[in-house]
Length: 143
Image (cartoon, rainbow, N blue to C red; front, side, top):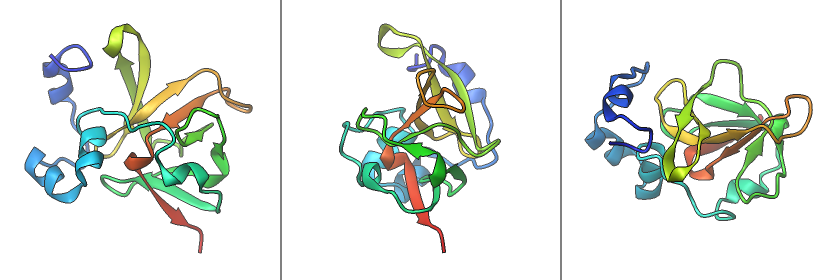
């Protein structure tokens, strides 16, 4: 049993970038592996990306797919980098019933890496708050 209910359903999901657990472990830091591949959560306020304010793109730390434009980032006060919208088609969601609650988990549409959760309490224009783990993201400043 996984955090999401049935391990079979999760293991059947296919993504354009597929790697073995050993390959992911070799490429990611232990903390990035724990969050991206094991659906962990980093400590709030621990990511340097909370303070990132430059123009650019936030990409998946697992596969490099661009996920969020810096112009959609805002200060939510939660302790995690937050965005009001992803780049179209860059992320996907699924129901997360872990920890005795129901939330909407956000993952990279390219590699399936766990990014965080989306909540319906964000700012206009979407009203959504994509609350992401900073360790799941790489920031690429605009040139």
